[in-house]
Length: 375
Image (cartoon, rainbow, N blue to C red):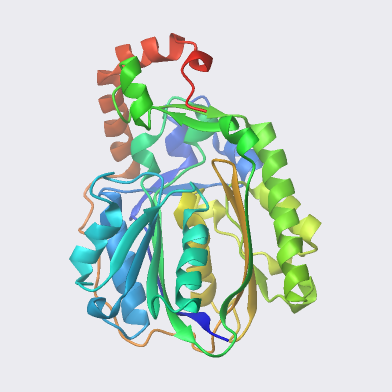
């Protein structure tokens, strides 16, 4: 049977760190309030477009695999905060890394975009369509954030990660997965302003207002991720004792703790990055997996369980068997350009730009959204 091994991995995190204290300079909050509710201390804010994060992560993953851009046959770009819609972002990565023979497309399932992309790439390898694939998860949430909304502004950050998949005969890579969507709850996590329907309301693209039902998101996320985790373990014929590490989507520490408890995983088996990166949407899970490998938390041949959820409400759980190699085959000198501003300065610049369209935003928020829904 053909499998799709993960043979290259890389991440890219912007250098500017936005702390809880920074947030308290313009929001009615403090470190204790944020930490006790989310487990978050810091998050990253990018000084470059999202595609630059993706390209840097991709180059590092390709070097790790001992390959070059021209070897890549498929590029999957997972994101809900693309720099452009037409042309697609994956084609921009293809151009910059020299993957002249590659197919390239984007996937948007919000925070699960990388995980859905991992399934697509693995399936296309297993079916013989391609022999390898580059899967990317990247977000530039800072540019679409409603920075005046404390409920969401404290949660998200920017980042990217990429992985190279390659055809293999041994059982490695994704060995079981579950994809699902609670479409009847899609309205509980909605970013108003990202989409063509809002232009008819006189709203400038990027002038966002977030619908975020925290309690219902918590309930659905815990239910969905725990059930999906149990399902993939059952179908793979394994128990939590067989799993080396659980690397969940890092949306909130309380969600992670609840999912781990229901899935039967103790705290020592759960890998966390939520405290230092917050929620990077589609980049969250792959960044965490890359760091877990780099820190030696994933043993050669070990099983990794990765549950996730995102807007839609999309859900997933993947059971991955890691390969034997734990280090990069080639060095990589890909780096972001230097950043001369602090994260707080970057955020305040975004906030100032938003105020230029504040009149439109006020009119937008007074409209009855139920009369203009796209459902």
